[in-house]
Image 1 (cartoon, rainbow, N blue to C red):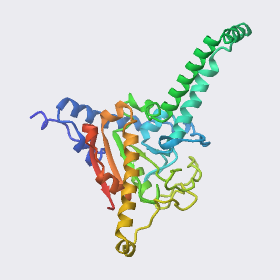
Image 2 (image 1 turned 90 degrees about the horizontal axis):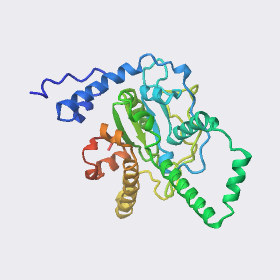
Image 3 (image 1 turned 135 degrees about the vertical axis):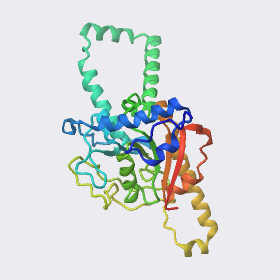
Image 4 (image 1 turned 120 degrees about the vertical axis):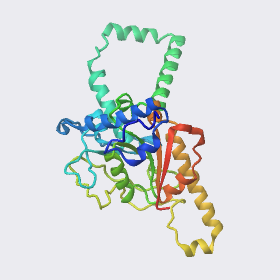
Length: 328
């Protein structure tokens, strides 16, 4: 009876939101309220005042840093970042599509501006006192140990999505839920990007590990990033890569080749699955708690659909709300 009296799903919420709703009436009502709050949060955003994302990559962004992210409009507001992409039929750009390291650089730039730049510089007397203290071998060893600990903490933070997604975690209207999207064998191109745009326009945070971004076993040269003023035609490739794929796990499946040497192709596909499965585990283990609580859908296109279909997600329990398989 309690479930039957729950309100209907808001019009703009995608159909599969209903599949992810908790069974308890209180949590169901909270989810419906979040969906309605998202629509309200998008209204009245002045996108002209938002800041453009940095475009200079770090030396080694890593698996997390190279992940592609598509932010819904309300999440764009939370970050204060200028939107750079639209969905089909939109009259203006309301979404943001880019890499995690851009968001990390944006948050660092603001921290330097709002916090570090306002700190009082050390006086000569304070600097001399520190230099004198470091003359003692025991004190110097302790300081170096603390320095190593802080550097390790920074490295661990940059390899996690917790700090990067922190601006979204305590805003109930920032996003409906999360989709972990696995692209096809050619990378994040064409239909892969279109799915990300469509999901973000429905209010979902889309996280897409880029298997082509500097991996050991395959990769493509990365092209420039999308800027707010760049055209983003819906039916064209957005040009995220400047070369074809290369590496031992690069392939183009032909039936004649598979029939000729089935064992070779079986080994290839198993190695590809292990690679993509490792990417999924790496991201799922590094999501902030609030993202896990709201629920995650795993979705794949072509090769990514193979990975999602075979992925063993039992260890993640209720945080996985469903799987979406496309072109497999």
